[in-house]
Amino acid sequence: MHFVIAPPPQISLAVRGTDARFPVNRIFCVGRNYAEHAREMGHDPSREPPFFFMKPSSAIVAEDGDFRYPSCSKDVHHEVEMVVAIGWGGSNIAAAHALSHVYGYAAGLDMTRRDLQGEAKKLGRPWDTGKAFDASAPCSAIAAAADIGHPQSGAVVLEVNGEVRQRGDLAELIWNVSDTIAYLSTLFALQPGDLIFTGTPAGVGPVRPGDRMHGRVEGVGEIRARVV
Image (cartoon, rainbow, N blue to C red; front, top):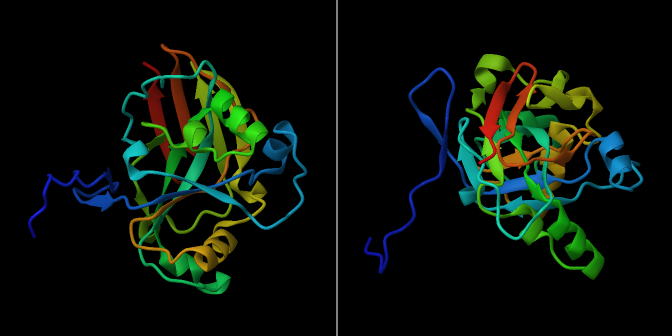
C-alpha cells in the first residue's frame, strides 16, 4: 500500500517476561470509579452508569519513561490506575464473558491538566485539552492474564518523591473490570489493542518538574516516571 506521507510508528508496550510487544490501539478511561475520589472531586459516588473519556495512543509513555511537564498548564495532577489490555474485541459483551476478552493488565498514570479540565467543565466543553495531551498516559509493561490471572483486589498506590499520595484497592472499584468491559462494549465495538484505564483512588494532586512518581498495582506491576 502506498501512502502520501509516512504513517506513524505503531505505539506499543512491552509484555513482561517476553520479547514481544502489545500494540496500543485506543485508550478509554473510566471517570470517577472510586467513591472517595468522586467525593474529593465534588460528586456523588452512587453507582450510576460509568462514563468514559479517551486519550490517543500517542499519549503513551512506555515503561518508565520521563513525563514531560505539558505546556499551557500550571496544575498537572497524577492519577494512578490499573490498566486493562484488550486482546479480543467484540460488541455487547456479556459481563460473564468479559474477562475472556482481556489479554493482560498494567499499571498506568492518567496525567491531567486539572486547570484546563476545570475550565472546560465550567464552560460545558469536552475535556480533551485537560486529559488527552501528549505524554498523558505513562504505562508499565503488560502482565499477561495467563500469568497473573484477573486481579479482583489489591492495593493501588502512588508515591511522589517517596511520599504516599494515593492509596486504594481494586476491590473498591465502583464498576469492576467485567462490568466496565460489558458496558463499554455497548458504546463501542472493542478492538484488540484497546486499553482501559479503570479509574483512580482518592488523593490526586499536583506534580512539579523534578518530582519522581512511583505507582504500583498489587499483583500487576509498577510504573515509574520522572517529571521533566
